[in-house]
Amino acid sequence: KIRLQTDVQEHKDTIEAFEVEVGELAEENSKLKEDMGELALENAKLKEELGEQEAVITELKENGDALAEERAWRMEKDRENKELRQELKEKAEAITALRREALKSSLNEKNTSLENLEQTAAPSPNERKALRMALFEQVKAVVDLSPPGSALQVAMFLHTLSEVIDIMCQDQRNIEKLEKEKARYQARRSEALSLLEAVIEATPTRDTKEVAVQTKSDGGEVSPMQLSTFGKGEGTKIKSFDFRFSSPVHSGLRGGRGHSSCRGPK
Image (cartoon, rainbow, N blue to C red; front, side):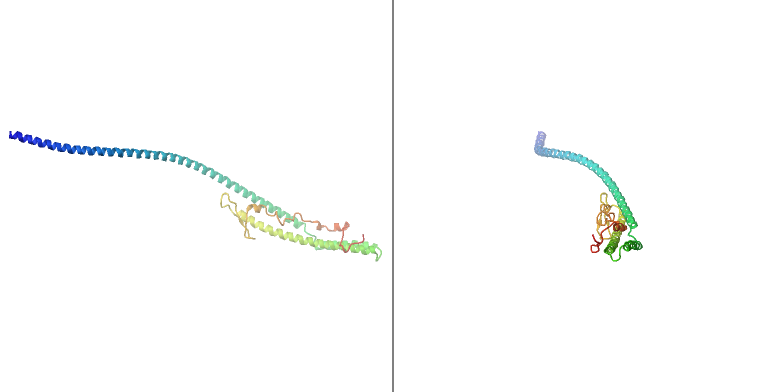
């Protein structure tokens, strides 16, 4: 009986211990339920964040595709720009070559004009002296046929003398004008030759930029277009120069009018 009582007491103690453990387990279970609720909330938050991240990933993928397309477009444009730059470079080189040829042709024309000008120079002093002597001989022949001291003799002498003076003055003016034109043209020709050498030696520093040439005369810059138009302004009157002075005797012998103060009778 005592043993049974002892066993019963032990079982009671065991049951109480189990009850205590069950209570503790119940508390732990409630805590676990609370933890599961919190985990469920965290899981929901994580799912929401995951959805946001997926949206961001999708947007990034779309942006990546757009960037890839833009990169391909830029590469295509760069290729087209490279081709255009090459084409512009070739055109610039062709234009530069044409301008050089035009400048060379212009210089050749100027050289030819200068040579023609030198070939058609004024008569030499001996030729002018011979011309005056011929006129005097003609006047002397006419005067000898006229009565001595007559008005016709005096008028013919004065008229012929005025013609000779006019011829000499016109001859001197033409000589001075010719020398000025030759000096001016030679100066412009020397400047153009120096500019041409500078243009030929220069090379373009950019694809679409023309070369600027530094002149020695004024220190400014002259473009190839200005070089191509060289000689079209002042100083090109040589071509239209009046060469009638090379044979002035014709105008005098055809009855030209002399000095206003030495004219013969009407």
